[in-house]
Image (cartoon, rainbow, N blue to C red; front, side):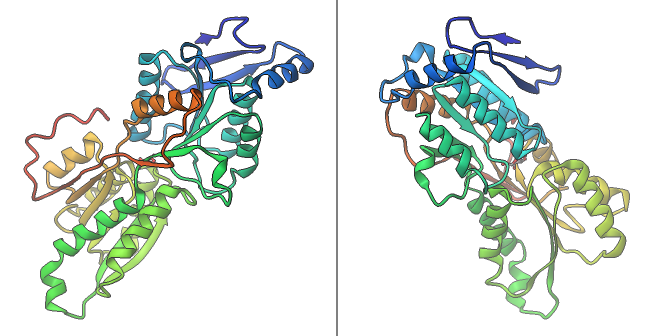
Length: 349
Ligand code: AHR
């Protein structure tokens, strides 16, 4: 639990952390509204950069739905601690409304910078306008937003989900090269388990994938269902699909969490993933690389969660009144069944 010192701000925020590292924010307003509005007027002099040692970053995370997400949270928390930034961390538990509330709390608290992972792409304009009017720069991270007014946020840092989808398609072109070249009439049937509906991660991965495979009519997406990035849903959905259709050549899963559930469902039915059905997955968690090594997965596309240090660097620059790049994509790799993986170290997630 972290208490900010009295006197640092007109209000006091208490952060509580549960045993699983899931942190929730409880904002306690200690002062009357009149005091808050005085504080706001002071802070509206946003042109005056915040002193670096006093930098307060409000961070709204979407939840803890996957090992990837938990690593992303650790990366942010460790990087903040390592760079002397006060982190106000809020876990939205997969609800956009909780994220909007958290961002409003950060505005009321007059943090120096706000960063957030938008659970879905749409619906942020009003709260971001409030942040802009309060003079607080906003950094969007991991997932993107759609907005008609790009001035509502300072920049984005995170993964390139369209490219991740393209990589999945490119792997399949190579995997089915002979069959495609033979030009037979039998379709290559694909089941897609997508991520959270309306999230840029799911939209981008679906888009990039189709960009590549749509040029080859042999590929046929026979099912595309959202598993919400959850292992439990990956399992349930694949159980349901396998009970009515065994004629599947490929499963493209938008994240490793769902993939692990998919593998369980297949193995329960005596299907050998990676051999009977080609499996392509995104994230590159340790468990997925282990499955790749064991021949149960054919291609793993990395989605890099370790953005904490870059976020802290950008937060410092924003607090100092500097401009930051509009778009920063992090470096990512692709691991396939043909690769020598001996040099790939522990993933850390
Ligand atoms: O936004 C990134 C996605 O969200 C990751 O692929 C997934 O595992 C996570 O929960």
